[in-house]
Structures are given as structure tokens and as C-alpha cells.
Image 1: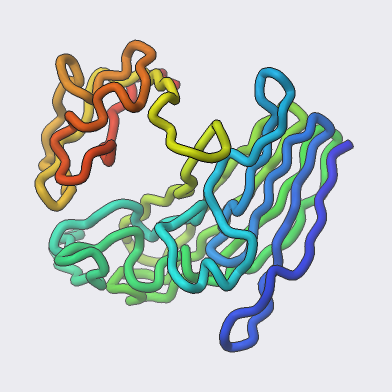
Image 2 (image 1 turned 180 degrees about the horizontal axis):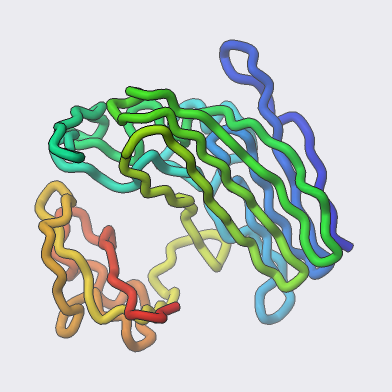
Length: 259
């Protein structure tokens, strides 16, 4: 049986209450999503042996999120990733953004969508799914972006063990939008992920400079540590990516029709 429950997740320093929703399906899959940052705090799924495990990183209480975190499970935006030197040009006009990553703008700035308390409402349940809708408003000029923007995100859990995220944004001015959910996955539930094996239908990637800003090039993954066109352990080449800190922090260009 599909189910959706809500309860208190605590309150903000100004007293604003924050809810958390629990979505469940009959196969043991559970998603917990809070109004703060529209964060996925937990995602429990059965593995191929039927053993349940929480496969995303997160915290059990609101206070831990308020102390700061690396965007665990949050909606990042208005623009996810970095904008070099905290500025962009749109329709001939330059816009200066809040800088929260050295000289750059990252994931929406000092107060992006990850730090907002979103409005929420459960959606009418279908026979095969349950869903909760989250929405928030970003006024013209917030963090330097033009336009009044309203973002709506719908999280849907199905009886086919799917968690779907649908995004919709409206604005009254031309403005860049590039949202994402910033979940960190660990299919083992804990420990490192170096033994996890990854396959990507991506023959190319976008190179970055020392500040992790895309250079504008598109290059082949062939012969690099970024080649996951064949199933490869994450730990096999993670020290060979060329980043100052070993690991992967790259944009992959999915092949047309890719998965």
C-alpha cells in the first residue's frame, strides 16, 4: 500500500515551523523529504537480495542542516554549479552575483534554494504513486539574479521503486535557470564508494580550469580517468582526474538518447 505521512522536523531560528514528509511504497522503498531546502534526507531501497538500506547522505534533525552542510540532498539553484567570477552577461547586460566559492558563485549563492523553507502540500494519491509538491519564491535581484522566479518541485514515489523529481519554473524576466537535486549516493549505506562500479553512456566531458569553471571545450573521455563507457570501479582511477583534490567533479556529456 502506498502511503504519505507528515510530521514536524523542527523550527528555524525565527520560529518558522518545518515539516518532513515520509513517502512509502509496498516494496519497502521509503523517501523522506523536508521543507528546508526541499532536501531528500533519506532514501531507503531494497537491494537485489531484498535487504533495506538508506542510500543517500543526510542528517536526522534540522539543527544539523542549519549548522552547514555540502548541499546534502538539497535543491540547488537558481543555477547549480559554478558561475566564474560571480557574473554573467544576458541580453547585453552584465549581472553581478553573490560570491560564495572564492571568486565564484556556487549553487545559487549565499542564500540559494537549499537554505529556504519551501511551501509544501501532499498531492492526491494515485493507485500506484504518492507525491508531495514543494514551491518557493525568489524575488527580482535576489543573489544578483534578474526576475521574480517561482520554482515548483514535485517528488513522486511509485510502486515500481521509482523516485521521480519534476521541476517547473516561471519568471517575469529573462534569467538563467539550472536546477538540480544535490543528493550524495552510497549504495552500500556507509563506508567509501571506491568499490562501486559505474557505467556512463557518455563519450565526452567538459574540461574545467583550476577553479572548476568549465573552459567551454568538449573533449573525449577516451584515454582519460573519466572514461566510464565500460563498467569501472570508482576507485580505479580517481587519483588520475587532474584535480587538486583526488576525485570526480566533472560534467559528463551524455550521448544522444543516453541514460
